[in-house]
Length: 190
Image 1: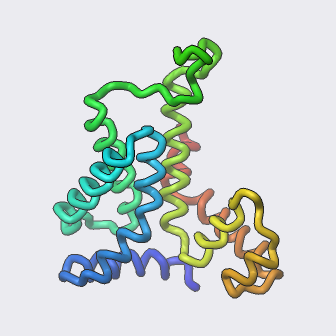
Image 2 (image 1 turned 90 degrees about the vertical axis):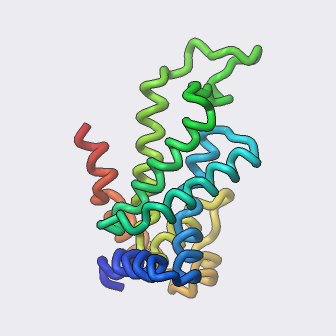
């Protein structure tokens, strides 16, 4: 698959969704839902709140899809909108992740500060945006490679209908694309 083929696929899906193609819209939601859910999970929302945020993000996308001139920017737009909606739902309050609380439920003094968590969140979002823009086969491979417990290469080969010998080179190409993604590069420049 050509490097720009997947980007063209997103552009095509956006164009088709704008013309009223429900299947294209469904494919966009399916493709970017993991990005939305990962951000929602980091904000520790209850199920109903998480569903509200996700629905609001998709509503905002419907409202603004025609204004998105560069389809490659869609993952970043979705991530930013999701964070904004989570923040809005919390009424602007800062939420302390549960792993940062001591045994009495109070903030742990040894926990890195909010700046560290913010940078960590930005890195996570950049990686998710880069992952979302990978060609589908590379994205599927990376997701299988990070399964816990780890899957044997033979199982990954079977699931993806990919020769075992192709897993390493495909993984290397995917990681190289992630490293050169504009969101990841922007974090490295900071």
